[in-house]
Image (cartoon, rainbow, N blue to C red; front, side):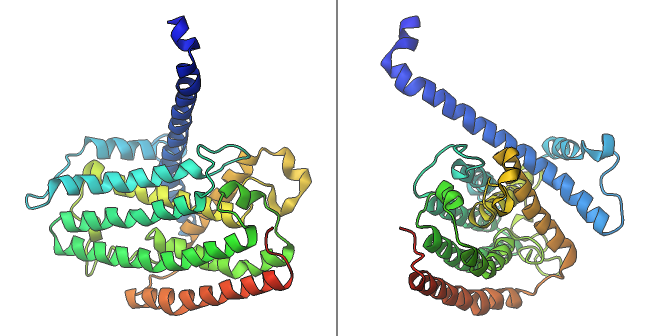
Length: 341
């Protein structure tokens, strides 16, 4: 046995494999814990904004409420409609939740703290986030319900529409940085005028991630008056919980993307060296929490859009504006010789 652990096969593949599995398990544990307590934070923040208490009964300050909700959903019976396509029906929520976890493989939470520091991390993230559409369409179609199918189509068209704007925002960032590696995007310095010019694209990105994650005021896949519960109206128990967890995991993922692309990742704010004594992972977490507060604040503040207003904003406002801004940024970077070398 000692000879096996000392062999080149184990040294080259065994220990690195175990370390990788440990990193993946740790990352998944942190994300799942964050998802559980994001639901608690949302209910407390909405309660404060609406002058009520929020969760306060289960555990001290209601801190055990997410655990109670999980136990309740686990103990319920999973009901599959008799006319549904059962394999696809059950696969859809699993796929959606899995994609939300898989994307974290390339997110750098600190210097050198990333599971896979690949050179095309941005493309990987964009591909994984785009595949979430398949899970929603599968759920709507497999339920064999007109309400679920229409909700799935509405959600898919909404996500696809705003992915176009998000893609152009990411292209603008890549013009300024010259790399698809997420760690490079954080560490490559940007002049102050570039940061100012990126502010409008940051606003476009913020609105687009609200639509991409189907969050209020763009929570249009659900509609009590026309679609009931939308694409997940036929789901119950843990299959419903996986959709619910997938939505919140996507919120955290999009907040992490915004942090990496625009807010400096793990670096201290405004480049203040005196703040560098705080560990980078702490700054990263605080920035992600600030972005998540934006999600919750938007839900509590803005009235719900109509679907035609949502589509008009995506195709007639954000798309032409993003195209013009990409061309403008490219021209300015060339004029001032600021393109990355």
